[in-house]
Amino acid sequence: MLLYMSNSPQRATSTPLHSVSVAGVVVREDGRVLAIRRADNGTWEPPGGVLELGETVEDGVRREVFEETGIRVHVDRLTGVYKNMNRGVVALVFRCHPEGGTERLSDESTAVDWLTPDEVRTHMGEVYAVRITDALQDELPHIRSHDGRVLMSSSV
Image (cartoon, one colour):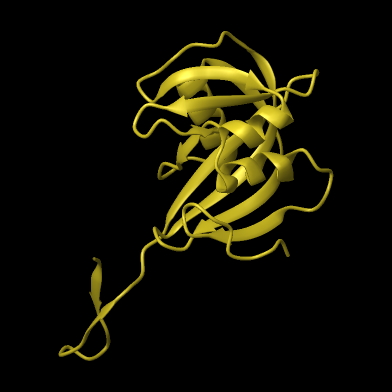
């Protein structure tokens, strides 16, 4: 926990910390979506991870997708902002399209596949499937909160 001193030398105040992550919902021309099965927990998710200091958001999306899948992408648009209320992680999710590369595994993925929207709903938990569903719609970005497994609020 990070502590900082207020104006009063006798009082230390706790500042809540948040982590910012990025993810790419990579959509092929045939409508299939790029997904990985994570090595650390076995769940299927869109590729993504923690944004590094000094890295632009778009560069972070491109880096994470390439590192986890071997696919190079063009970042099209922001499709959603998702907050895990239990862990303090804010995820920025972007719709992307592939620009090259070849699917490959990484230290972070045990499978890489192009899923149909129906397969997304059967392979992924609610908080990850909704990110892809949101990205496939042509609407304003969605804003949602969840507890790590279940959505807690509706889109704004």
